[in-house]
Structure formats: C-alpha cells, structure tokens
Length: 335
Image 1: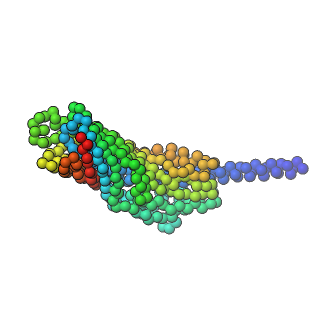
Image 2: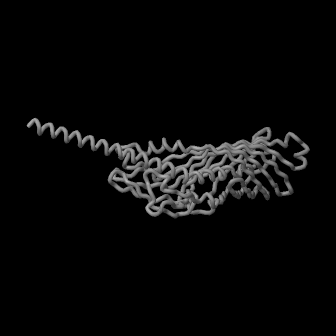
Image 3: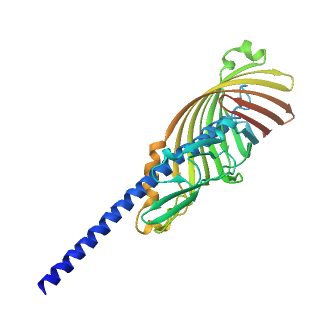
C-alpha cells in the first residue's frame, strides 16, 4: 500500500511538473508572438504617423499681415495628402519573426497603414494549437482628404491666436482627428517702410495633436482573442514657422519655412480580448509599444496664394519636403 501511495505521489509530481513546463513554454511562445507583433507594428504604422505631421502643420497662417485687434476669422479647410509610393509597402521575411512564419514562401511584400488591401497569411504554434492571422490591410487611398475647422482672433501688439479642430473623421478604413492652437506675431509692423510696400513678415509657434486609428491584428488562440485588433497612433507636434508675404491688389502670395518636432506614440485601443481573464495582454502590449516611440524633426516648406472678395477669402497652400500635402480653405472675416 505504501508503495502504491508513493507511486501516486510521484506520478502527480511529474504531471504537475509537466504542466508547469508546458505553461512556461507557452508563456515563452506568447513572448515571441508579442515580439513579432511589435516588429510588425513598427513597420506598419510609422509611415502614417510620419505623414500625419505634414497634415497637421498645413494652413495655420492665413496671412502674414499685421492682424486687426479682436478681429475674428472663421475658416473651413479641406486637406489632401498624397501618399508616396515608397511608403505604401514593406517586405517581411521569415527570419524577421520568432513565432510566426509565412504560410507560403519565405518573404512577402505587405502594405503599410497607407498601403493597399493586400493580405498574406501567417502561422504560428502556441502549445499544440495552430495560430493563424492575416496581415492588416492599409487604407488603400492614394490621396487622403479630410475636413477641419480653424478660427483666429486678432490680439493687440501685432499678435493673433489660432485654433484648429476636427471631429473624428472616418477615412475609409481608419479614423482621424486633429486639434491644436498657435500664436502668430507680425514683425513687419515694426518697420513702417515694409508695411507701406505691402510686404509682410510674421512668425508662428503652434502645437497640434493628431490621432489616427485603424484595424490591426485580429489573433485568435485557444486561450481567447488577444485584443490587439485596433491600433492608434498619436502624434504631438510643435511647429515653428516663419512667413513672408506680398500683396497685389486682392491677392496675397506667401512663402513659409517651418521646423517641426513630433513625438510619435502608439497604443492598442480596441476592445480587450478574452485572454484578459488569465493575462493582462493589452497592458503588456501597450508597455512594449513604448519601445517604438519616436521623435521626428522635419523641415517643411509651404507656398500659398490667397484671394480676397469682401469679407471672404479663398486660399490654397502646398507643403513640401519628404511628403507633399495640399490645403484649400474658405475663410470668413467676421468683423
């Protein structure tokens, strides 16, 4: 009897040890899966975050002229961003991953967030179970157009407060929102001879925040869904801009140069997965996403033309640098 009891204890200990080892192996595999998701996130989301900088800095300055104190301007803007061909795809190799492998072949070209809707299937093993996923689609738009509102208030001593706001806009397969504020100061009013020649100089300091969200990796496992099916990029940009303009009757032509510094951050923002009952996976992912936070410095040019008729203006602007962005606005001067 004693021998039977010892055998039972031994078998139980071996079984528990086997389970512990299996769980440790599965946790290690989940770690590899997370590393793969992090690698893919960086390649997939960075282009659209870089592009967001150009979208946020466009059209801040209506005029380089000295503003009238307490004059209010209301503006409706339509922004059009051209997605560059070289940022629409990237290539993945089986050697890039520690958990997933391509279902077919050893490499594939897949879309970034600004790319098309092409997908490939990847497979991994979690314990004895197969995990399959399709790579996320891009927004599949060669041009990204969205509207936003802007308002300005003239202040004493040649200054102007500018506010930009857009409600959350659905861009086919993603959601986009931008808001911010800026302060412009006219320099040419210090030089009467410049103002008399209708030649204007101003500087602007502005802050804007953008958020862009899109569907990401919908991963199903025997432990439940992982809750990383929605990824949000957050872009905080400080902008310093110098502008020079010249008036010709109802026209004002302006050239600007700007320096921007942008913090690019990311988070999983969708509904939490059912795996959260046993593992706080979304929190773990968001902590790991801090590893791919970035700071970007950009040097951007802008040229614009504005035509005035009565209390209304129509203005077009073109931003250029790494990317090209256009902006058209209808403006109304309240008083």
